Structures are given as C-alpha cells and as structure tokens.
Image (tube, rainbow, N blue to C red; front, side, top):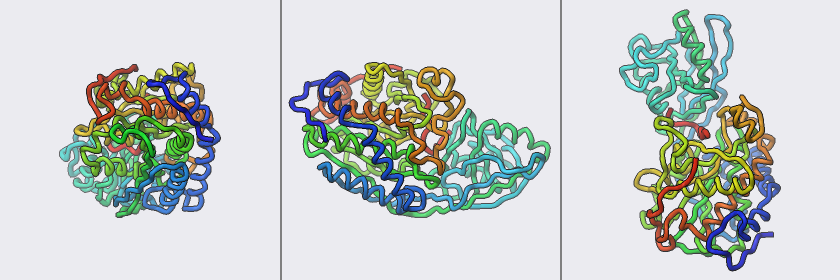
Length: 490
C-alpha cells in the first residue's frame, strides 16, 4: 500500500515521519519485482533492452503501465538517433610472436566493421594520438596501439583512419576494463577495440619484435527511433519541479539489470509508493532512452526544453547503477571537493554540493559509510549541469568496471581487487548480478532524497524556490570513481 503523509513538516531529515514512512513503504522486494519483469522482457526480445530494438520498446510499455496505474501524467518523447549494435563479439588475436591466441577486449561503441590482420605499430608521434601529426606513413596498413588519455576516443580513431591504419586498439591508462565509445557521430569504417592497461603495455613492448595482430568487428550503425518516458505528479507547484531520472536502456550485449534496470526499478517502486502523497513541489520522473549511445535521450530532452521550462526545474537527481554486486555507496561529488584537477571531475552548478551533502548525511544517519565519485558528466545528469543549463544535480552510484580497493572492502564489505560489477556491459548482467543489500540501502537513500525535495528545495535553490529556479544558494557538501557509461573521452 502506498504511504500517505498529511501535513508534512517544512524540512525533511532521516528521522522525519514522511521520510521514514516512505522508506518503510519502499521495499527491496518491490524493486526486485520490477527487475524480474525487465529481465523477462530482455529474455523475450533477443537478450537485451537496447534503444531502437524491441526489448527497449517493451520496457517503455511496461514502465508506462506502472506509472499510469500509479496515477501519474505520463508522456513519451520520441526522437531519432544513430544506433549501434554489435552483430558478433569482437576479436583481438595475437598472431606473432608467441604466445599466439585470442586476447580479452571490448569493442568500442560505434566502431566500424572490419577484419584486419597486420603488423602492429604505435603512433609515430605522441602515444595518445590526439593530433593528426601523431600518425605517419609508418602507421598505414597497420594495427595501431593508442593510449587512452586527453582527448575523445573517436578523435584518436579518426586520426588513425586518416593515416591509413587498418584497425585501432586503445589501451587503458588505469586499472580495469576499458568500455569506450567513439561517439554516435563516428562513421569511419575502421574496427576499434579497447583493452586493459596491462595488456596494452605488454603489446607495445612486443611491437619491436614484429607483433602481428588480427582485429575483427562486425557491427551495425543506422538511424532508429526511440522514446524517453516522463511521468509527472498530479499535485505540487508546477514552477518548482523536482526531477529524478535513470536510463532505461541496456547495451546490446545483455539485459542490463544492474546497468541500469536497478535505477529504473527503484524509481518505479518509489513512484508507486508516493502516489498518494500530496507533495508541495511537482515531482517528475524520467526514464531515459539511448544513454548507452552517449546520453542521447537526456541531451534531447534538455535541448528541446524551452528556457522558461528549464528554469522551473529546481534540481535533478540521477540514479545509474545502484545494485552492483561488489558495491560501494558512491555519491556524486557535486562540489568537487574530493578530486584534483585533471581527473575529469568539476564542480556542479550552485546547489549541487548541497545535494551531495544530503546523501552523505542520510548515510551517516543510518551508520553507513559513503564516498565520493567524480562529477564527470558521464551519465544523464551531464546535460543538466552543462554550461548554459546549470541545473543543480546529484545522485548515487554503486560502481561499474572499476576495481574495489582494500580500503573500500574494509568499509563496505565485498572483495578487494575485483570489479564493483564483474558483468558490466556483458551478457551476464542479469537478475543474478545485483546485490539485494545494495538495492535495499540505495533505494531508501533515493526515496529519502526525493521525498525531502518534494517538499522543500531551499537548501539547494535558496529562498527564491517556489516561483522559478533560483541560483542564490552556494554549493555545500563534503567530500569514488564514476566510470560508468561507455566513455566518450579519456
């Protein structure tokens, strides 16, 4: 049964009746039921829920049904985008020298198709390959090994293709797998894959010894139509809108239950349990399409939202992966207090630090540790915090392909030296790949934030909230790795 809270106090905190009542109503069982339904949809539709394909369309149908039954005003926002679907797993094979054999790799999203067996080289200039002059005649017809760093992956691949390279292998510059995207505007017909830092260093060392590699990719790139889904409460101040979002799509490789049915399912459960709560502010839930194609859905939404409507959004909360099996309770570092320059993190719009603080304060009240993750713009909050939009934002994350440290294992449990999500962007990202404990803890934190701001956004927007979004509140908060989505840049 949905929670009903009459005459709520002006400002919620973890001990307040409305937060307590909603968290009591929101259950891990409820979230898991939505996850099971999304798993079934993937199983019935080719094993995934990728935007532009039937599994995603059926996911939209399911979410709309849940939200309409809960009494929300639901709209679909359709748009076209450049889709990317691997037709088969990519291949990276060492031909010579020994030991010959297949090597672990991840296809770069939006890679072209190709099958090249050729001598391996490194850029003739800078190993990062960010300038056209970094490649020369010696790279023509070869498989070029390029380091991650500084510029977008698509720029590296384009430079290599312009120099006549047969294929591109980009190696990480930190620990962990490399899940990258060349960007949905990349149209060059060259195969590109990503590998770990350790493998990259091993292969680079073998280049002088006549390293020969085979790189094969079979992909589809083409225009497709997909839809965002937006659900708005029937009460609350329409000039002070609290938004909460998660991406609904998966990658083509699997059903995407951790990434990101977990965020979607939590929002569906919370929306159901809030259906009878007469909030002071308008609440708008958003389930984004084509996040895995470089944040296309959320970018489309913001780009097509008139300025007057943007100004009504008090804040945006993003929940992208909140059930990772080897999880950490990461909070977006809205004030960038924890990360030095050059890490890809930056302060968010004024008020983002206050959102960060709310989450840390909540976890502290529950005697649970939490930590920062870079505010890098690599999930659907990115378009909200972009220059000229400047909507205060925040959210939660439990980790993707990054590796859990010994210190994190001591604080959060789990296994040090292993990825937060070992099935990230893989076929094994099923219902068995989520932590029920993480779902339980994080969905309560999500519920607390939404119900808090549904009644009072002044800690974020300042005393002017209630007419249109203000920017008077300074960023607050405390002081971690958010490397979730297919990365566009290094």
